[in-house]
Image (cartoon, rainbow, N blue to C red):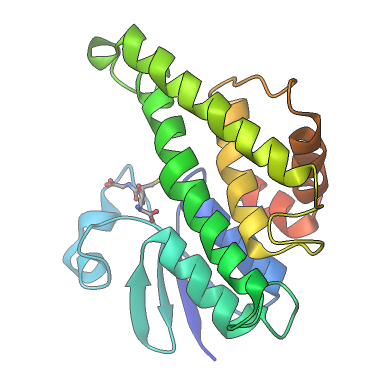
Length: 208
Ligand SMILES: N[C@@H](CCC(=O)N[C@@H](CS)C(=O)NCC(=O)O)C(=O)O
């Protein structure tokens, strides 16, 4: 097994770093200096034509898009470690569902909210109405998570999987950078607390 992981701290790559740590697989971490534009150099674009992190090379094969990487890591290394459900199980379908939901549905609302409120995005492009609509979507989606976590401990059932890790990472960004108030969702809050305490999650979120 050979894994080379192209990474930058405080980026979408943090979620992948947390998964690699959780899986305990050996990997080489290559820091990509986004500010210096290292991601747009020809040798990096040969791996990922988008010029973005995360990018990973598994057994000589480059791949990109964080959700695809999470699924590949889960399926290759997670099943044996109990961190990803086996193909063919009901839980496998749930893991795919919630992992993708976290990035596509919840993640899009969070990104829209951030783009219209955060100091990291241009003020002149921000729109109060867009922010309000995005916040409404986020709260609808938090309600969906609260309902799910009211009947089971984790997204796929009674076991932690990489899907939990991934969705909690999105929520961490929403709560800390976006200042989204989750006090109305006690089950959600408890689940975020449990997942955030995992050593791999802490490593992934505090890496430099
Ligand atoms: N959809 C991609 C998004 C990746 C992405 O936005 N990466 C950012 C960091 S969070 C990046 O590398 N930006 C550098 C650039 O755009 O030049 C994924 O989920 O992997």
